Every structure is written in structure tokens, then in C-alpha cells.
Image 1 (cartoon, rainbow, N blue to C red):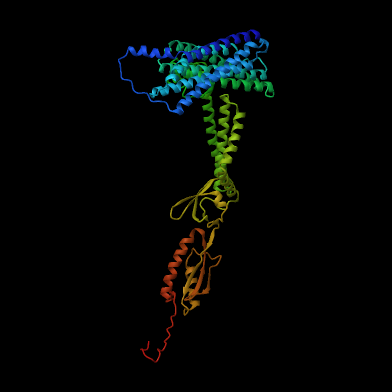
Image 2 (image 1 turned 90 degrees about the horizontal axis):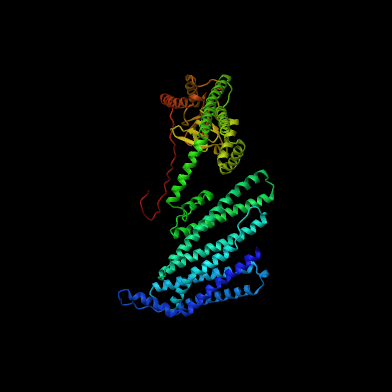
Length: 593
């Protein structure tokens, strides 16, 4: 079978060379015929004064000549390779030589299209491309025949992918298959470009377009079938790898199958793009690409594809609903019932715990109390949700593992929040303050109105609400003003130096003893504090209950002032003695000052 394929390939290669040689002959020998054809067409049109043609620049003419020379060199190399293949024994003709011939021919094809396109662009810009135009017409006219021969030659050597071979052999066969098919699709692309050029040059392309349509449709159908087969292989190999995860051969075959799906999908997408350029319906192939790969591109996306995908999904949804709808509805109702019962149970457990804590009389902080109640409720609800999910057929093992990984990622991203949480736990256990206490921390002073494991809300005395992160509180000095039941009021009164200190102390003791809010134990203290610049400072330090602190201080200040006024005790203002010195003026003149 291998010998026959090589012989057939040689025959096809010879035919391809014949067509190319004919093209070269026409290229150099039919200038008069090509010049006469436009004249006959012009006879049927009204005579118009032709616009003067612009001469080509030396640079442009040199560029065109270089492209033409490159084409001639490629054709000569193709002739040499073909002659070598004809002379060698058939047993020595290998795929490497044939692949080289195909590669050079494909390069020649692209260069021919590029040359013809450049000439057509210059002609449309009213440049005098005279002999180059004739040669471009020859190339464009002969390209379809040459492409047909080259496609047949490549198609005869294609070996289809097979999943029955070992992984190493599959990789080799796949590489040859996709290389050959990509070259064929590239030939179709060049032919499509040449058809456009032929239309610009006034050449009839109906037969070539029909040939290309049939070839592209056939290629799309084959690629679609290959894609379905490759996708089925992937599904089967994934199931096998799940059972035998340590089998290296299965793992290698799965990688090859996944790559086969990817390359086949890319091949089909390229064909679909050509089908659209030829106005060939390609909706079904575009839908297959979206379904298999999940990728949407501009080449395969249109209204027809979208509507087809929506219709197909609706049909699958209807079938699924009819087949599994009743069971799903029953499972969903069971899910809702379980979640509802556990919500009720969580509320009941929370109320029972709250009553137990209240009746026990245990001295715990509000934060710890709220955390116990909230944690018990949330744990019961979470347990109910997990049990309900199990009723829907969801495996809890992977779900819990996923939650663990997600928790690690979230914890890494929320380091500051976790620091606040840790500080909240320290505040919870050490209890430096509680809800209702008046504290001073981080330059904030007020009453604690709310506590959580993340932050603390402080209500200032002018009714401002401050939310302070627990981490900042724990790292700062915490001053709990209302932590103790009693507080000492520190007051200082200044009297003149000529006042009777004993009388002042006696008056202050009388005022303190007359106020029932001033505690007898500890006893109040009235002492001489210090000597100021203009007054003697008398210290007055009574003890009161914490709740009476501000009222007693404000009332005592008022009563002391009134008592001092009645007793004639003055509270001096700051004083400064100013001494004036008289200096005599010199005897030479001037008045005394």
C-alpha cells in the first residue's frame, strides 16, 4: 500500500509541475493575446479619453521585478525537486522530499498571490504596470488548476488520527495530519484571495468559486466529525484516568486527545471563516465550536448562531425538565424544609442559651455573651445547610475542601481584618472594658455603645459615634474611666497670700460634709498644695460614686465660689510687680524725667 501511495503521489506531483510550467510559458509568451483581449472589450463601451498613466518609480519597478524573479526561482526549484523524485527509485522516495516540495509550492502560491495583488493595487491607482499586469493575469488564471492538483496530492497522503495507537505514535500521526490539513486550508485561503484578485482583473471565477465552496464544505464536514470523535475520546480517557490516575500512558493519551480537540477546533474555525467569505451557511459548525470549546470569536458569532444555541439549550432544558424535573422539585422542597427546620432549631437553642446565661448570673462580658449566642445559632444553621445540600446529591467532601482553600486565600487577603479579630479575642478574654464603660483610647473618649470581634463603637459625650478597629485599641493604652465603683475628684482653689488658710480648709470641709454624695470612706482630703506666683493653691479631693462624678464636681465648684464670696475670701488674679527707676539727665541740658 505504501508503494502505491508514493507512485500516485509522484504522478500528482508531476501533474502539478506541468501546470506550473504551462503558467510560466504563458507568463512569458502571451503578452499580445492579453493585450488584445482588453481591446475587444473596449470596443463595446463608449469611447472615453483615457487618463494618462503614471509611470512606475524605479524603486517600485525594482520591487516588482524582484518578486517576479523570486517566483521564477521557486518554480525552478520545484522543477528540480520533481525531476529528482522522478529519477530516484520509488523505494527511496520519502515523505521528507515530498513535504519539501509541498512547502516550496505553498510559498510559491503565496508569493504569486502577493505579486498579483500588488500589481492590481498599482493598476487601480492608475500606474502603468504594463508587462507586470499581463504576468499577474497569467498567475491568477492558472492558480485554481494548480491548487486543485496540490490539494489532491496532499489529500492522498493524509493519515487520519487514531486513538488505538500508542501515545507516541498518535503524536506523530497527529502532527502529520494537522500539518497537511493546515497546508490545504492555507491553499484554500490563497485561492480565495486569488478569486478576489481575478474579479478585480475582469476574469470569470464562477467555476473556481463553485469548486472552492464544495471543497470548503467538505473540509468543514470532515473537521466537524473529527471534532466529535476527539471530544468523545477525551470524555472516555478522563473517565479512565479517574479510575487509574497513576497510569502514565493514559495520562499521555489524554493530553494528546485534548490537544487534538484544540487543534481540530482551530482548524474548523478557520474553515468557517472561509465559508462566510464565500456566503456558505456555517451556523451548525459555529454552534459546535461554541459548544465544544466554550469560546466565542468574531468569526463564528452571529445572530443565527446565537439563536441556534439558545434553541438547542432550550430543547435540552425541556428534556432535562421532563426527565428529572419531578425528582428535582422534590429534592428542592426537601432542601427548603431542612433549612427551615434548622433555622427554627437555631433560634430555639439561642433563646435557651440566653436564658441559661441570664439565670446563671455569670459575670461575662457582653461581647462574649453575644459571641456565644451568635456562634451557636450560626453553627446549627451551617449544619442544616450541609445536610440539606447532601439531600440534593452534592458531595460534601470536595465542598469542605474547597471552603478550606477559599478560607486560606481569603485569610491571606484579609490580614488586617484578622489582626482586628485577634485583638477582639484578646479584649474578649481580658475584658479591659465592656459595653457601657467610659474609656479613653487612641485619642478618643466616650462611652462604649457596641462591641464586636472586629471593632468597637464609642459614643462621645457630644453624641458622635466613633468606630475604632480593635487592633488599634489593643495596641494603645486603654483608660477605663468607669471600671471602678468610686472615683476621686481632684480640685484646686487659689487664695490670696493674706487669707487665713485654716479658715479656708474649715470652710471646704463644711461644704464637703454637707453634700451626701461625698463618701466618708475614703475620707476627703483638703491640703495646701503649692505656692503660686499670685496665690496659695488649696487642694480639695473628695471621693464619690463613679456615677456621681460630674454632678458633684460641678456642684462643688459652684458652692465653693459662693461660699468664698460670702466669707470674703478672694481668689486673686495673676499679679506682677512693676518697679520704676528714675535716671538723672546729664547736666548739659534737658528736663528731668
